[in-house]
Length: 365
Image (tube, rainbow, N blue to C red; front, side, top):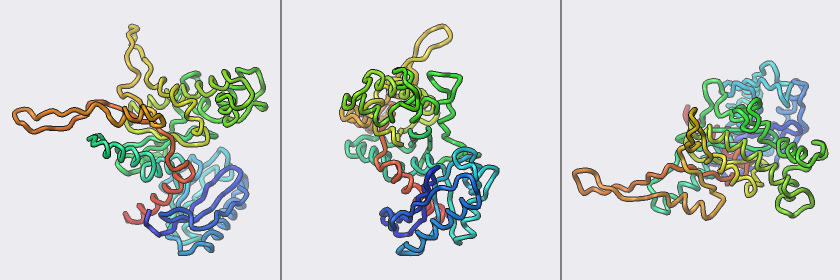
Protein backbone atom coordinates (compact mmCIF):
# COMPACT_ATOMS: atom_id res chain seq x y z
CA UNK A 1 0.00 0.00 0.00
CA UNK A 2 2.95 2.33 0.59
CA UNK A 3 4.81 1.43 -2.61
CA UNK A 4 4.85 4.51 -4.86
CA UNK A 5 5.99 2.66 -7.99
CA UNK A 6 3.48 3.19 -10.79
CA UNK A 7 2.11 0.40 -12.97
CA UNK A 8 0.03 0.95 -16.12
CA UNK A 9 -3.20 -1.08 -16.25
CA UNK A 10 -5.92 -1.94 -18.73
CA UNK A 11 -9.50 -3.14 -18.25
CA UNK A 12 -10.14 -4.85 -21.60
CA UNK A 13 -13.86 -5.28 -22.21
CA UNK A 14 -15.74 -6.07 -25.38
CA UNK A 15 -17.12 -2.52 -25.54
CA UNK A 16 -14.43 -0.29 -24.05
CA UNK A 17 -10.75 -0.41 -23.18
CA UNK A 18 -10.14 1.53 -19.96
CA UNK A 19 -6.52 2.51 -19.23
CA UNK A 20 -5.14 3.75 -15.94
CA UNK A 21 -1.99 4.08 -13.83
CA UNK A 22 -1.83 2.97 -10.20
CA UNK A 23 0.55 2.85 -7.28
CA UNK A 24 0.11 1.23 -3.87
CA UNK A 25 -2.52 3.79 -2.93
CA UNK A 26 -4.67 3.41 -6.03
CA UNK A 27 -5.17 5.34 -9.26
CA UNK A 28 -2.85 8.27 -9.88
CA UNK A 29 -4.42 9.45 -13.16
CA UNK A 30 -7.90 9.96 -14.56
CA UNK A 31 -8.69 6.74 -16.46
CA UNK A 32 -8.67 6.92 -20.25
CA UNK A 33 -11.63 5.21 -21.92
CA UNK A 34 -11.40 4.28 -25.61
CA UNK A 35 -13.81 2.26 -27.78
CA UNK A 36 -12.69 -1.35 -28.03
CA UNK A 37 -11.55 -2.53 -31.44
CA UNK A 38 -12.58 -6.17 -31.36
CA UNK A 39 -12.22 -7.44 -34.94
CA UNK A 40 -9.31 -5.59 -36.56
CA UNK A 41 -5.94 -6.45 -34.97
CA UNK A 42 -4.07 -3.43 -36.32
CA UNK A 43 -6.73 -1.03 -35.05
CA UNK A 44 -6.91 -2.84 -31.71
CA UNK A 45 -3.15 -2.65 -31.16
CA UNK A 46 -3.19 1.04 -32.15
CA UNK A 47 -5.92 1.68 -29.58
CA UNK A 48 -3.98 -0.12 -26.85
CA UNK A 49 -0.77 1.79 -27.56
CA UNK A 50 -2.70 5.08 -27.69
CA UNK A 51 -4.38 4.40 -24.34
CA UNK A 52 -1.15 3.47 -22.55
CA UNK A 53 0.59 6.47 -24.12
CA UNK A 54 -2.06 8.84 -22.78
CA UNK A 55 -1.88 7.53 -19.20
CA UNK A 56 1.93 7.51 -19.33
CA UNK A 57 1.92 11.18 -20.28
CA UNK A 58 -0.52 11.97 -17.45
CA UNK A 59 1.36 9.92 -14.84
CA UNK A 60 3.08 11.95 -12.10
CA UNK A 61 6.07 9.58 -12.17
CA UNK A 62 7.52 7.26 -14.82
CA UNK A 63 5.83 3.83 -14.73
CA UNK A 64 7.91 0.76 -13.94
CA UNK A 65 5.71 -1.86 -15.65
CA UNK A 66 2.53 -2.68 -17.52
CA UNK A 67 0.20 -5.21 -15.89
CA UNK A 68 -3.38 -6.04 -16.78
CA UNK A 69 -6.03 -8.68 -17.31
CA UNK A 70 -6.95 -9.82 -20.81
CA UNK A 71 -9.49 -12.43 -21.91
CA UNK A 72 -8.08 -15.81 -22.84
CA UNK A 73 -7.37 -18.39 -24.10
CA UNK A 74 -3.77 -17.30 -23.65
CA UNK A 75 -0.25 -18.29 -22.73
CA UNK A 76 -0.18 -15.69 -19.98
CA UNK A 77 3.45 -16.11 -18.80
CA UNK A 78 4.63 -15.40 -22.35
CA UNK A 79 2.01 -12.71 -23.04
CA UNK A 80 0.52 -14.51 -26.05
CA UNK A 81 -3.23 -14.04 -26.55
CA UNK A 82 -5.43 -16.39 -28.56
CA UNK A 83 -8.88 -14.98 -27.89
CA UNK A 84 -11.67 -16.44 -29.94
CA UNK A 85 -14.51 -14.95 -27.90
CA UNK A 86 -15.38 -11.30 -27.55
CA UNK A 87 -12.04 -10.11 -29.00
CA UNK A 88 -11.68 -12.11 -32.23
CA UNK A 89 -8.93 -9.80 -33.49
CA UNK A 90 -6.58 -11.76 -31.22
CA UNK A 91 -7.50 -15.20 -32.53
CA UNK A 92 -4.67 -17.33 -33.81
CA UNK A 93 -1.99 -16.19 -31.37
CA UNK A 94 -0.90 -12.58 -30.86
CA UNK A 95 2.25 -11.78 -28.86
CA UNK A 96 0.65 -8.81 -27.10
CA UNK A 97 3.01 -8.79 -24.11
CA UNK A 98 6.25 -8.77 -26.13
CA UNK A 99 4.72 -6.18 -28.49
CA UNK A 100 3.99 -3.78 -25.63
CA UNK A 101 7.43 -4.36 -24.13
CA UNK A 102 8.95 -3.24 -27.41
CA UNK A 103 6.64 -0.24 -27.70
CA UNK A 104 7.13 1.09 -24.16
CA UNK A 105 10.39 -0.50 -23.02
CA UNK A 106 8.62 -1.72 -19.89
CA UNK A 107 8.19 -5.24 -18.50
CA UNK A 108 4.66 -6.36 -19.33
CA UNK A 109 2.55 -8.88 -17.40
CA UNK A 110 -0.78 -10.22 -18.58
CA UNK A 111 -3.12 -12.41 -16.57
CA UNK A 112 -6.70 -13.60 -16.43
CA UNK A 113 -9.10 -11.22 -14.65
CA UNK A 114 -10.25 -13.97 -12.28
CA UNK A 115 -6.63 -14.61 -11.30
CA UNK A 116 -5.90 -10.95 -10.60
CA UNK A 117 -9.17 -10.60 -8.67
CA UNK A 118 -8.12 -13.51 -6.47
CA UNK A 119 -4.65 -12.03 -6.02
CA UNK A 120 -6.00 -8.64 -5.00
CA UNK A 121 -8.40 -10.16 -2.46
CA UNK A 122 -5.60 -12.34 -1.09
CA UNK A 123 -3.36 -9.31 -0.59
CA UNK A 124 -5.72 -6.64 0.73
CA UNK A 125 -9.20 -8.13 0.73
CA UNK A 126 -11.05 -11.07 2.24
CA UNK A 127 -8.07 -13.28 3.14
CA UNK A 128 -6.25 -10.80 5.42
CA UNK A 129 -9.58 -9.60 6.84
CA UNK A 130 -10.50 -13.14 7.92
CA UNK A 131 -7.07 -13.86 9.40
CA UNK A 132 -7.24 -10.58 11.32
CA UNK A 133 -10.58 -11.63 12.82
CA UNK A 134 -9.13 -14.98 13.83
CA UNK A 135 -6.07 -13.34 15.38
CA UNK A 136 -8.19 -10.93 17.42
CA UNK A 137 -10.20 -13.89 18.70
CA UNK A 138 -6.99 -15.68 19.79
CA UNK A 139 -7.79 -18.52 17.39
CA UNK A 140 -4.88 -20.69 16.22
CA UNK A 141 -6.58 -21.01 12.85
CA UNK A 142 -5.10 -19.14 9.84
CA UNK A 143 -5.91 -19.37 6.14
CA UNK A 144 -3.34 -19.43 3.35
CA UNK A 145 -5.56 -20.45 0.43
CA UNK A 146 -8.14 -18.30 -1.35
CA UNK A 147 -10.32 -19.43 -4.22
CA UNK A 148 -12.18 -16.71 -6.10
CA UNK A 149 -15.17 -16.79 -8.42
CA UNK A 150 -16.64 -13.91 -10.39
CA UNK A 151 -20.31 -13.96 -11.36
CA UNK A 152 -21.07 -11.66 -14.26
CA UNK A 153 -21.07 -12.03 -18.03
CA UNK A 154 -19.42 -15.37 -17.37
CA UNK A 155 -18.13 -17.48 -14.47
CA UNK A 156 -14.48 -16.75 -13.70
CA UNK A 157 -12.06 -18.24 -11.19
CA UNK A 158 -8.69 -17.72 -9.56
CA UNK A 159 -6.53 -19.40 -6.92
CA UNK A 160 -3.91 -18.03 -4.53
CA UNK A 161 -1.93 -20.18 -2.08
CA UNK A 162 0.79 -18.97 0.28
CA UNK A 163 0.80 -15.57 -1.38
CA UNK A 164 1.44 -17.02 -4.84
CA UNK A 165 -0.95 -16.89 -7.77
CA UNK A 166 -1.46 -20.38 -9.19
CA UNK A 167 -2.09 -20.39 -12.94
CA UNK A 168 -1.15 -23.97 -13.85
CA UNK A 169 1.22 -25.39 -16.45
CA UNK A 170 -1.03 -24.35 -19.34
CA UNK A 171 -2.26 -21.00 -17.96
CA UNK A 172 -5.54 -22.81 -17.36
CA UNK A 173 -5.88 -23.41 -13.62
CA UNK A 174 -9.04 -22.51 -11.67
CA UNK A 175 -11.20 -22.49 -14.83
CA UNK A 176 -14.28 -23.19 -12.78
CA UNK A 177 -16.62 -22.20 -15.62
CA UNK A 178 -16.06 -25.53 -17.35
CA UNK A 179 -17.05 -27.77 -14.44
CA UNK A 180 -20.17 -29.85 -14.97
CA UNK A 181 -23.50 -28.08 -14.50
CA UNK A 182 -25.39 -29.34 -11.46
CA UNK A 183 -28.86 -28.81 -12.98
CA UNK A 184 -27.98 -29.77 -16.55
CA UNK A 185 -25.12 -32.30 -16.40
CA UNK A 186 -24.73 -32.25 -20.18
CA UNK A 187 -23.78 -28.55 -19.94
CA UNK A 188 -20.95 -26.64 -18.28
CA UNK A 189 -21.34 -24.62 -15.09
CA UNK A 190 -21.12 -21.14 -16.61
CA UNK A 191 -24.39 -21.74 -18.47
CA UNK A 192 -26.14 -21.73 -15.10
CA UNK A 193 -23.97 -19.22 -13.24
CA UNK A 194 -23.93 -15.87 -15.01
CA UNK A 195 -26.11 -12.94 -16.02
CA UNK A 196 -27.79 -14.80 -18.88
CA UNK A 197 -28.53 -17.72 -16.54
CA UNK A 198 -30.44 -15.61 -14.01
CA UNK A 199 -32.32 -13.82 -16.77
CA UNK A 200 -32.99 -17.10 -18.55
CA UNK A 201 -34.42 -18.74 -15.44
CA UNK A 202 -36.74 -15.82 -14.81
CA UNK A 203 -37.88 -15.82 -18.45
CA UNK A 204 -38.54 -19.58 -18.41
CA UNK A 205 -40.49 -19.53 -15.14
CA UNK A 206 -42.61 -16.52 -16.08
CA UNK A 207 -43.17 -17.63 -19.67
CA UNK A 208 -41.54 -14.54 -21.20
CA UNK A 209 -38.81 -14.21 -23.80
CA UNK A 210 -35.18 -13.86 -22.77
CA UNK A 211 -34.95 -10.54 -24.60
CA UNK A 212 -37.70 -9.15 -22.38
CA UNK A 213 -36.31 -10.56 -19.12
CA UNK A 214 -35.14 -8.07 -16.45
CA UNK A 215 -31.48 -7.67 -15.51
CA UNK A 216 -30.17 -9.57 -12.47
CA UNK A 217 -30.23 -6.28 -10.53
CA UNK A 218 -33.89 -5.83 -11.40
CA UNK A 219 -34.66 -9.47 -10.62
CA UNK A 220 -32.98 -9.01 -7.21
CA UNK A 221 -35.22 -6.00 -6.57
CA UNK A 222 -38.26 -8.11 -7.48
CA UNK A 223 -37.09 -10.90 -5.15
CA UNK A 224 -36.87 -8.37 -2.31
CA UNK A 225 -40.39 -7.10 -3.02
CA UNK A 226 -39.09 -3.66 -3.94
CA UNK A 227 -40.15 -3.80 -7.60
CA UNK A 228 -43.21 -5.25 -9.37
CA UNK A 229 -42.83 -8.69 -10.86
CA UNK A 230 -43.01 -12.37 -9.98
CA UNK A 231 -41.26 -12.56 -6.61
CA UNK A 232 -41.28 -16.37 -6.45
CA UNK A 233 -39.76 -16.61 -9.93
CA UNK A 234 -37.10 -14.07 -9.00
CA UNK A 235 -36.09 -16.00 -5.89
CA UNK A 236 -36.04 -19.28 -7.81
CA UNK A 237 -33.86 -17.71 -10.51
CA UNK A 238 -31.15 -16.92 -7.98
CA UNK A 239 -31.64 -20.26 -6.21
CA UNK A 240 -31.00 -22.17 -9.42
CA UNK A 241 -27.83 -20.18 -9.99
CA UNK A 242 -26.80 -20.83 -6.37
CA UNK A 243 -27.20 -24.58 -6.84
CA UNK A 244 -24.90 -24.57 -9.87
CA UNK A 245 -22.29 -22.37 -8.18
CA UNK A 246 -22.53 -24.29 -4.92
CA UNK A 247 -21.95 -27.61 -6.63
CA UNK A 248 -18.97 -26.20 -8.54
CA UNK A 249 -17.50 -24.81 -5.32
CA UNK A 250 -18.03 -28.13 -3.53
CA UNK A 251 -15.95 -29.81 -6.23
CA UNK A 252 -13.30 -27.09 -6.04
CA UNK A 253 -13.09 -27.06 -2.25
CA UNK A 254 -12.71 -30.83 -2.11
CA UNK A 255 -9.42 -30.28 -3.95
CA UNK A 256 -8.32 -26.82 -2.74
CA UNK A 257 -9.67 -26.40 0.82
CA UNK A 258 -9.59 -22.68 1.67
CA UNK A 259 -11.60 -19.49 1.82
CA UNK A 260 -13.89 -18.48 -1.03
CA UNK A 261 -14.46 -14.92 -2.24
CA UNK A 262 -17.20 -13.99 -4.71
CA UNK A 263 -17.02 -10.98 -7.02
CA UNK A 264 -18.68 -9.68 -10.16
CA UNK A 265 -21.91 -7.75 -10.56
CA UNK A 266 -24.19 -10.58 -9.41
CA UNK A 267 -22.34 -10.71 -6.07
CA UNK A 268 -24.41 -7.68 -5.02
CA UNK A 269 -27.37 -10.06 -4.66
CA UNK A 270 -25.50 -12.29 -2.20
CA UNK A 271 -28.16 -11.84 0.48
CA UNK A 272 -30.56 -13.68 -1.86
CA UNK A 273 -28.40 -16.53 -3.17
CA UNK A 274 -25.69 -17.11 -0.53
CA UNK A 275 -27.63 -19.41 1.78
CA UNK A 276 -28.95 -21.65 -1.03
CA UNK A 277 -25.36 -21.82 -2.32
CA UNK A 278 -24.12 -22.93 1.10
CA UNK A 279 -27.00 -25.39 1.45
CA UNK A 280 -25.92 -26.96 -1.84
CA UNK A 281 -22.32 -27.28 -0.65
CA UNK A 282 -23.47 -28.82 2.62
CA UNK A 283 -25.90 -31.22 0.96
CA UNK A 284 -25.66 -34.98 0.78
CA UNK A 285 -24.06 -37.42 -1.63
CA UNK A 286 -24.60 -41.15 -1.99
CA UNK A 287 -22.67 -44.37 -2.26
CA UNK A 288 -23.56 -46.92 -4.93
CA UNK A 289 -25.68 -48.85 -2.43
CA UNK A 290 -27.72 -45.75 -1.53
CA UNK A 291 -26.12 -44.71 1.74
CA UNK A 292 -25.85 -40.93 2.23
CA UNK A 293 -22.90 -38.91 3.47
CA UNK A 294 -21.91 -35.23 3.61
CA UNK A 295 -21.15 -33.64 0.23
CA UNK A 296 -17.89 -32.20 1.57
CA UNK A 297 -15.93 -32.69 4.80
CA UNK A 298 -15.73 -29.01 5.78
CA UNK A 299 -18.50 -26.97 7.36
CA UNK A 300 -19.37 -23.88 5.32
CA UNK A 301 -20.09 -20.45 6.82
CA UNK A 302 -21.55 -17.30 5.27
CA UNK A 303 -19.15 -14.49 6.16
CA UNK A 304 -21.80 -11.92 5.19
CA UNK A 305 -23.95 -13.14 8.09
CA UNK A 306 -22.92 -11.81 11.51
CA UNK A 307 -24.14 -14.88 13.39
CA UNK A 308 -22.39 -17.34 11.07
CA UNK A 309 -19.22 -15.25 11.10
CA UNK A 310 -19.11 -15.44 14.90
CA UNK A 311 -19.45 -19.24 14.74
CA UNK A 312 -16.79 -19.42 12.05
CA UNK A 313 -14.31 -17.38 14.08
CA UNK A 314 -15.08 -19.20 17.34
CA UNK A 315 -14.55 -22.62 15.78
CA UNK A 316 -14.20 -25.43 18.30
CA UNK A 317 -11.13 -24.30 20.21
CA UNK A 318 -9.89 -26.52 23.00
CA UNK A 319 -6.67 -27.12 24.87
CA UNK A 320 -4.94 -30.49 24.87
CA UNK A 321 -1.69 -31.63 26.47
CA UNK A 322 1.24 -33.34 24.83
CA UNK A 323 1.34 -37.01 25.94
CA UNK A 324 3.88 -37.62 28.70
CA UNK A 325 4.09 -33.93 29.64
CA UNK A 326 2.07 -31.04 30.99
CA UNK A 327 2.69 -28.86 27.94
CA UNK A 328 -0.63 -27.42 26.70
CA UNK A 329 -1.53 -26.96 23.05
CA UNK A 330 -4.36 -24.92 21.63
CA UNK A 331 -6.27 -26.97 19.10
CA UNK A 332 -9.19 -26.28 16.77
CA UNK A 333 -10.49 -29.50 15.18
CA UNK A 334 -13.31 -27.87 13.20
CA UNK A 335 -12.65 -28.12 9.47
CA UNK A 336 -14.38 -25.10 8.00
CA UNK A 337 -14.70 -22.85 4.98
CA UNK A 338 -15.76 -19.21 5.00
CA UNK A 339 -17.44 -17.67 1.95
CA UNK A 340 -17.72 -13.92 1.54
CA UNK A 341 -18.08 -11.27 -1.13
CA UNK A 342 -15.27 -9.03 -2.31
CA UNK A 343 -13.95 -6.66 0.35
CA UNK A 344 -12.34 -4.37 -2.22
CA UNK A 345 -14.83 -4.40 -5.06
CA UNK A 346 -14.10 -6.51 -8.12
CA UNK A 347 -12.50 -3.79 -10.24
CA UNK A 348 -10.32 -2.51 -7.39
CA UNK A 349 -9.24 -6.04 -6.49
CA UNK A 350 -8.16 -6.67 -10.10
CA UNK A 351 -6.13 -3.43 -10.06
CA UNK A 352 -4.51 -4.30 -6.74
CA UNK A 353 -3.68 -7.75 -8.09
CA UNK A 354 -2.22 -6.36 -11.31
CA UNK A 355 -0.05 -3.84 -9.43
CA UNK A 356 1.20 -6.38 -6.90
CA UNK A 357 1.85 -9.06 -9.52
CA UNK A 358 4.08 -6.71 -11.52
CA UNK A 359 6.06 -5.49 -8.53
CA UNK A 360 6.50 -9.01 -7.20
CA UNK A 361 7.81 -10.14 -10.59
CA UNK A 362 10.20 -7.19 -10.80
CA UNK A 363 11.49 -7.68 -7.26
CA UNK A 364 11.99 -11.41 -7.83
CA UNK A 365 14.36 -10.90 -10.75
